[in-house]
Amino acid sequence: MLIAAADGHQPQASTIVIGEGPLSHDLLLSGTSGLAGQVRGRSDGAPVSGAMVVVTDVRGEVLATGVTGEAGEFRFDDLVTGTFTLAVNASGYRPTAVPVEVQGQGITRLDVDLAAGARVTGTVRAGANRRPLPDARVTLVDAAGNVIATSTTGEDGAYAFTDLDAGDYSVIASGYPPQANALQVTGPGVDAYDIELHHPDE
Image (cartoon, rainbow, N blue to C red; front, top):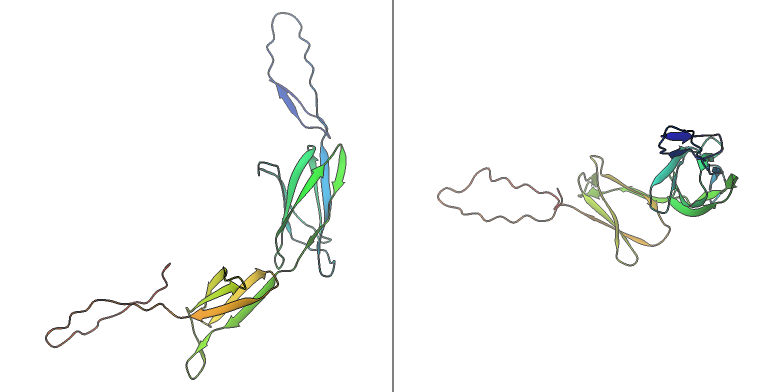
């Protein structure tokens, strides 16, 4: 196995068979390219630090990953030329994926603007005293009637939906679905007949 590697080039491996005499074998090394840029907030243009940046090829295989720096910058070296997908995900922003064409040797630059993800938070309360209701099911439905997300309230009755697109939504809150059980009562009756309520997916 003959392996050749050099800075700025893709390593190349080749299998050769050596006989009794001298052997001449040429290797062709392909130059590598780089990809660099900055991740910014779309609304204010401020750099987004700590964003996860992933480069994948046309088959979806991950070629490189990184996290943006304080100035929102990222850089990947040692990429071959070709078409790739750059996916960016950051807390508080909508994830995005953009195609990028890396050509020739050198650095291809691509800046990415992220749209801030909207959020909906609140508390479900019940009864005349408006106490927080734990374990209630909250459903978020868009204007077309599609269920976008569901949430179950905590002990404080709080719920939250994040990374939403701007638009019109409906928020539906409900307790447990009703539970029906067959019961036969004879003699003095039935004591300690407990009923467990739960959500269908639990």
